[in-house]
Amino acid sequence: MSDEADRLISAALRDHARVAAPPALRAKLERRYLGKRRAWLAPMVSGVVGAVLAAAIVLLVVRPAPHQLDVAEEAVGDHQRVLESRGLGVISTDQHTVKPWFAGKLDFMPQVAFLGDDEFPLEGGDVAVFLGHKAAAFVYGRRLHAITLFVFEASDVPTAERTIRGFHVMTWQAGELGFALVSDVNWGDLRALRQRL
Amino acid sequence: MANVPGNEFARRPLSSATHVARFSLLGRRAPLAVVGEPRAPTFAERALEHLDELYGLARHLCGNTGDAEDLVQDTYARALAGRFEDGTNLRAWLFRILRNCFIDRARRRNIVLEIPDDQIDAYVPDASAIDQLRYLTAADIMGAIAALPIEFRFVVYLDVEGFTEAEMADILRCPPGTVKSRLSRAKAKLRAALKEAL
Image (cartoon, rainbow over all chains, first blue to last red; front, side, top):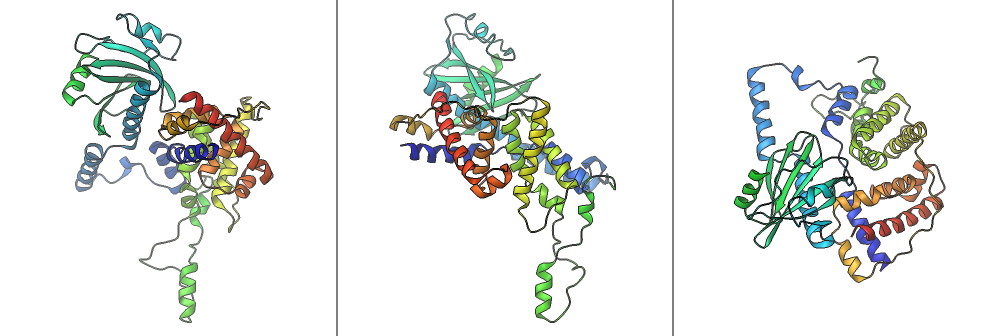
């Protein structure tokens, strides 16, 4: 049993323990040691600028950035864990129950104004580990489905919508906090909740 | 650029062992430069190929991105100003420098490096717990590694990166038997930490 557990843990370590260096760090080291110039120093020829802009648009719009992948993937994994494995740390009895429960459990106050209504009742909350840091998880109901909102400290969460393994994920940044909304409800419902937040 | 540590490596002559072999067969001398063929990477370029691996370890050791970035920058500054012995293991050499840089920083900040002499949970997962291990997330793994003593984080990450016990012993400056023992204890700790997480 222990061998099988070690094998599974080793596989999970290989999958998840590696952390890619931030692009800004790579760029800084390449400038310092390889003499690569900053992009803005390149000749400002209109054709070149156009090509760079087109490439940037393709990269930003068509191909998701690595960080976006991380946030969305993490949101789906944690959404499943919050719902299926551990249950909720606090169950909502009225709209004043959940938010105060996080006081003292996090290093920040989750800025969430919407605390449920008839269409999206707030079922409860929990503290989750999101991208290696503590995060607030708010769980809303939608008919027989659940929607999890993760609120975490971050600086560059992209505004994006993705579908991963059947779960829809919306991510965005507001101030010093990152947000990820994830569920198996349809996009219309998810966007309706996003509008309320 | 002339004062940048390590920049002298960018001016190293191109290594063209392949060309030497090819032209020797034809009875010619190796060319000084071959136009149109890919040049050999400079030492700095070869070193920077290991950036992600080094950053990964730094991230687990430091627990936050800011300190991890500083540690990696210190590592490259020291490595590219230092003297690498050609023919030895560049990757292991870089990891050893990162470890030395981390130890220097840890001493300044009074971070405990010693492995606590505590009892390690001899927990053996049952079938249902093993099934849960199939669904470990990145957060589970990050949390479990963060719960390990520093020296255990080294061996766990070096193992993930595929270093042999002999290479790990060289990086960590300890006997191979110590590496084996630490790895075994670290895995037991991980099992226990993941039991709590699941």
